[in-house]
Length: 484
Image (cartoon, rainbow, N blue to C red; front, side):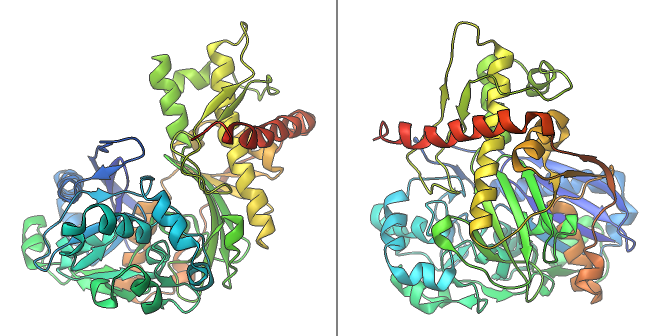
């Protein structure tokens, strides 16, 4: 058996698979996000361990014999989080998360240093790890002085599981400290933020061994033999492993808390000015590009909270067939935006409201706003040299066929819906655990699931969608000037 652990923003998922990659079962543990100030987003690392224990305890209650047979564990996690430890591995402050934008001034200062884009292949985004450490140095110098190790969220779980300070390439590529082409830490960039390589974890590939499960946890979970813990992956690269998006030309769209358009690459193709992320993949000698929007299902959940009606009910009010845009435009920039704007200050907006604008009209606009933000990502990927002919849909928002039809129509490509099953980050992490424990061929293991159905673009709505997208594009510069 092989265990995948996915540390997300809202919870930890533990998934158990067998040697044939059949899913045996899963367990979950919940997490909350603390937002003490505008633009801040934090979690206590101790809560990750609690949620992980909850998830594994849920598995053990239902599948004790199967859990006892685990030989490999893979880790997936939310990226970019700054988990700061002292010399005794004690947490110095709450982890600053991926969607925290407080360090936008520090990010701009680092990005102005041409070495960062040249070595990492990426803009220094406020959500990345390096500017967070610069913020801590500027605002919490007493904490910065005590930092002995900086770990990404999933790698803090690894420390708990194995006692090792280890990370891997795909997650580390999102720190602004990795030489992405060479797949190693850049001592030059670390020095630019007053850090050294000694304060970083060691690096392995996602398919390689990165520690062994501690005896205390093996006893607690009823496991007798040695358990290899794989390097694992950042959440999007792990999802790609679960979806089989590991070869040139493969792509997926993820509608989760954030939204992602992800394309696998056989070579390193940086174009930082496009705000496209060029990162290492979880498999050796592979890379990927992705565009990221900060609010996907998060935007619908915000609308649900304001409306006082469950998100699924709001979408159901739209009916079955895709409708032409109404003229109401929604900008989903509730906590700023990454691709293509790299703007921590911009905020969301409804435009074009009138007396006749019903709740359903607003819901439609929210879905379209996220769709158009993903279309922005497609245009950015094109400018960076990546061509996409179809995408596979994953994430909670992909349960809405209306939303997927909207995406297919705006992007102008078919959207594949995988056959029933869970092929996301936890599954991808379990696959990496299998590879690390058995030495199996990574590409053979990371195969694509069967396609259940395909959603084609609605040709009759192409022109209406294109006009609505152009309105959406024009809205950003118009309202940007109103933001302080």
